[in-house]
Image (cartoon, rainbow, N blue to C red; front, side):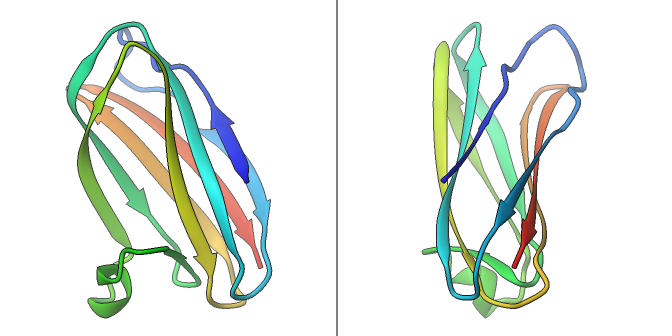
Length: 117
């Protein structure tokens, strides 16, 4: 498990990316946890996830069926500490970057995980 921990501040429009590294073996599944703090409840934020070709999100078959390498969904954020667990699986040998972006209005928080397989 890798945990990325960074607060979301609602006063700035763009946040710097937090970069982490994850070493995986072929066909290995690991849980990436994005942890972020929010000073207030936020309704209808958007989480977008971009994956390299050799990494997939477990239990999201449309990433493999349709050849898409990204998925997004709306998420409600509660005041305080929030945790989002993302099970990822290494399915190739190249690795690459998993990029998760959390957006609300004009604000964005980016998490980047360099995956080595």
